[in-house]
Structure formats: C-alpha cells, structure tokens
Length: 102
Image 1: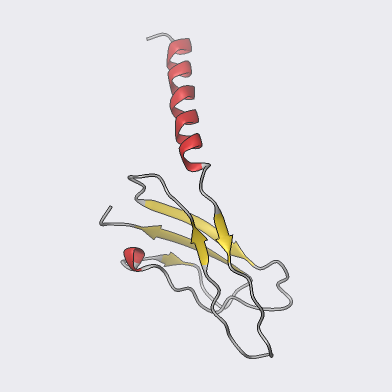
Image 2 (image 1 turned 180 degrees about the horizontal axis):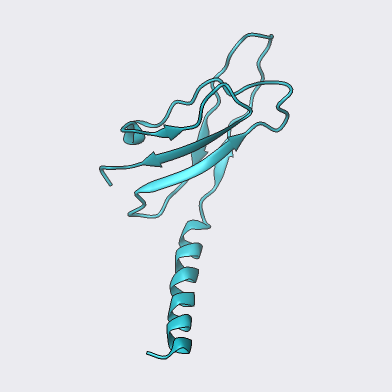
C-alpha cells in the first residue's frame, strides 16, 4: 500500500473517531457553599458517550481556587472498580474511569 493511500485511510479513521466523541456535552451543576468549612456536593454530568467506550479521563478544576478546594470525588457505580483519582484536597483533580462491564 502506498504511503499516500495509508495516510488518507488513517486520516479518515481519525476524523471518524474525533467526530464520534465531539458530540458529548459536559455540564457542572453549580451552586454555593453558604459558610466557610461547610461542604456541598456538585454533580458533573456527561450527557452521552459513544457505544463501546471503555475508559475516559478528564480534569476538574475550580474557576477561582482561592475560594474553595475539591475535597472528594464520588465516581459512578459503573466505574467503582479501581477508579484513578488524583489526591484531594486540591484545586484541580484528574480522574480516569474504566467501565469493565462495557
């Protein structure tokens, strides 16, 4: 197979993969914490993911780190087996989840 044909096929495959993932919307339900030293839970929701996605990773960061800390992360039930979450408390948290059940 020529290099040009291989590059064209690879470009098509990559563009298909990118377009499949780009349709997801991630929303964070905001809110307020009324007093210092109090905590609140805020949900982060991904509206849809492509069929067959087994793993995903993302970073959660505070818009103004001087006002709060991320003190914990609760992962969804489908990802409860060995989630990889960076240490908390922090201003930014990296999360990597695996869906072993598919």
